[in-house]
Image (tube, rainbow, N blue to C red; front, side):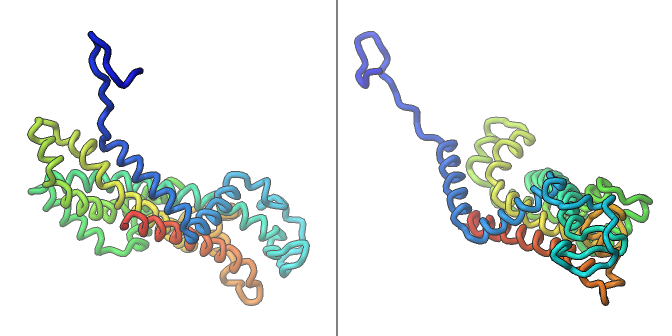
Length: 299
């Protein structure tokens, strides 16, 4: 189309550069910074490795982690079994590689539950304020005064079962108050700005203002909270598993292996050491990514 209008035609007007293009540019810049961060890249590679092991355990594990139990029991690491064998004659390397599945199912599910519910609660209390905010804030303070693991154990004991999804829901509900407090603080800093006041003057409903106006502008702390909570969720799942709440043997879950063999650490150290190192590498990798994301979003 010509840049000049012919007689009888309306002149072409270029669309103004809006907030969407600026937001897209900001997201691209953040992604570029993340890809250039060594800590983020290292953490992402380690996480990707464990995710691959969780999704395709038969491709990476040299033996079946449960049913291949024909090897010499309690054998120290050798060339044939680099991580040794357990008391049942199963290859520890295969069990460690396959054990990533359970923790990578439960921890992300718990994190999503906690972040979604906490974000909703934080938006409501931060925007509505008043009596709603006061009552919910006092309840959150009371919940946060209790230790996470102790609270989870009490709830699991009261329910009477500790399946994967029960543990995920319990950890997610315990994370909800922490996320809610973070989101509430972010909403309070945005609620009195001009764009929110303009939405109120237009007669927009509170649910629209919270979902369409406030939520996009508080996404940065939510994303940071998501990655941080994932690291805590992995540690919480592992702790509960070690205490006997969660996936039970003969499943090759890392925490279940540690729970089963920690009393045999002398002299059979390999049965406990390698599952513990697997948990440590995953937690450290998630924390590396979380630190990198926090640095980018705080710029």
